[in-house]
Image 1: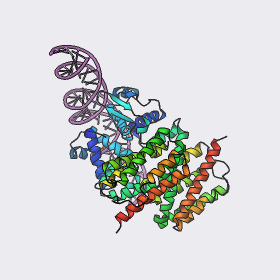
Image 2 (image 1 turned 30 degrees about the horizontal axis):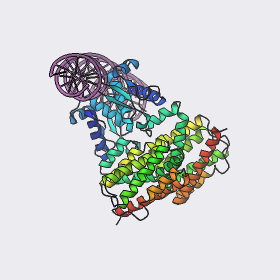
Image 3 (image 1 turned 45 degrees about the vertical axis):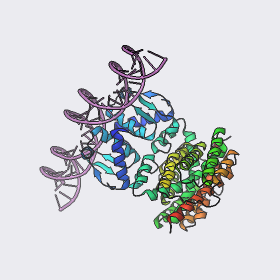
Image 4 (image 1 turned 135 degrees about the horizontal axis):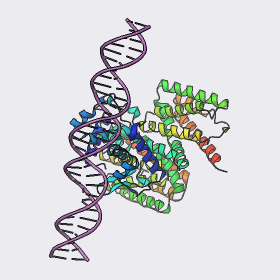
Length: 233
Length: 233
DNA sequence: AGGCTTAATAAGTAGTACCTTTATCGAGGC
DNA sequence: GCCTCGATAAAGGTACTACTTATTAAGCCT
């Protein structure tokens, strides 16, 4: 995404602050950061500006660059989410993302049933069938399944026609990828889980808002439960 | 918030792009922007970097700064939401925010019933009582009511213990403020709407997740309906 | 002790020079 | 005539320097 020295410094700083190393309240100096990262003032300043927009730091004259308390951070910022998923708080971040999905996806499904274009409906069906097939073959842990899963849920959010919901596609994709790569998905899915994508896609295709919402909700609760059991005893 | 020349340029550019003036696909030149805003390279570059992080522009060598299509924008970014609410798309933005609230707040209420601290529960009750009192006095359009409303819904989201939900406090506050300032709230609230804050706060205080979720949902649907009717015929 | 002045500090802004990438075009060969 | 390769130039990326301004903190005077 953000390439070049600027991006490197940004990611480095963001990752570390998200991990809690320079703790909130810590005051950084521009000059010091220049040395630490052996980069020019320009590069550091640009990185700081982005972090400032996320609310992670605040720059004040005569004082320096203060790391802000977590409550001030924009937790929904995609960059921050990425950094969090690479840090020690990744499990909590995954949990938070899952809760968000449970809240948001059923609404997206409902809206999609009303607003999705014909091509979107068709593509959702296609992806759901693919997921169903792969699942029945026991390939629920493969890269291919993950890709289709990401595509399905992303398209669902996009089809809602609500930009705010659509913007969650990226974070949610990272949630899915994060879980699979940590091997947190159950090897054997609970019975009934498999066709859920399919019935959901059909409900959307037929324009049934309530059905779509219900199936999405049921699906997510199922996934949530599987995860909870996996992390439990 | 972001003060100084940097902030000015950032807001100016962000507002205009959000309003659709330099349309997606348009290519801006750094040097040109320097002249247009009579600011130094430094200032412009920092603004561009922030816009780049939001996904509104992409800078490429030998090409320039391309305004990205809307789908690439991070619609959840607080700055962008603010710009959108000041532009010609404010009604659509308010609608999108309302849909988001309907999805998110019931979940937040449910989680708050489980996780809120004693002080948070008490404060929610206090705010709900205040809202109830003001409403019964017909002061639903005052600054005071707006402030309490914002505080209530913000605290609700914060009490969920989920940073991603808490991060929506700011956008939702702007949604509430936006509506009241445009006079889009009904003068006479529908019957039953008034005590809804109160029963919701009580459900949270008593730790009843399902009740909290249901009341939040009912409340939002009520508000939504009022709005829809207000905007309709 | 309290308020006012002053000095020191660190970020903010400006401007310049130079580096690096890359779209574009033209020359040469197949 | 088309394709490949290389030169060229255009634009952002990086570095460095000088100067400005806000803000804190110390010091001084009353």
